[in-house]
Length: 399
Image (cartoon, rainbow, N blue to C red; front, top):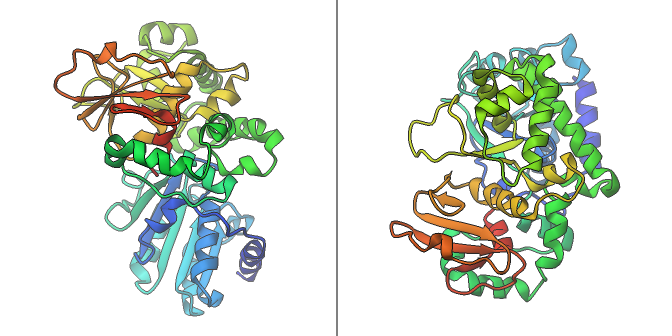
């Protein structure tokens, strides 16, 4: 155990504290069991260590461990927790729990056997909380950590401290909000860089290798996490890579499942299941027309990559600008709101508002016949909007 303590305290010594994710302030850290899911590279490990460094002066009461450490090849998590509590431990932070066999059962036992212990755990976006062998859904408060918003990116790179705005604020007060922001920065000067390489916090480490590292993350998800956590046959992984490339090259992708299954050699039911796994893994986003009855094996009406950085990494040639705009909107707005594919327009949000996304000269003719919903034009390459025309970049300030 001393080996684990030394390793995590060394990490604390070199931990940057100048920027912290917004989710940090939303998590109920006082709960006895907290789970944080998120894509690889989103910053889950940094968040745990920053929480420890900022809020725990007595490090003897705190232990951080990554469950992919070789120490766990010969030692059990429940035994570690028992020893830690007997030595006065009160806060146990567990990283990468999906790397540890039977993690859910042992965390359940720790929760039940040590009521004085607070446990925080992180894992892959594919982590099953409800369907795991030991159902933790009634015990754990689970959060999802998405990649950086455009707001967080600007705060991170420019040393700013811009606040979060609600969707209602942006829809009804976008002019005042944009004017306030423009007094400090020129958002369009940073927006293109964010779309290409600003979603995952590790973009700052070695900028020249960002695209390569992002592809390594994608390959790790496809080659390791999907077979491990969703029992995807490794032989089908090249087909999934081909599928991601097809989505990246489309503008945007409206799947014909029969043609697609024939093209890549996967039967219809398996293809639909794998499409669902890509969403769970944080690699794609699906839009459906139906408001109810959506099943895991229902055909999506529109597919996007989960974020714009993936488009630049998977398809190095300049991606389609229209698709990038829609991908950005779906990613930033879809994090906290329900998205559907309307009959006309690009997005129906929370079954209330319809949005058409486009460039600076985007017209409103496609929304002319909408009567049931409020309609908005979302325009790229403009700093300020007017009435129902809103700058695209401003939707990056939702979280």
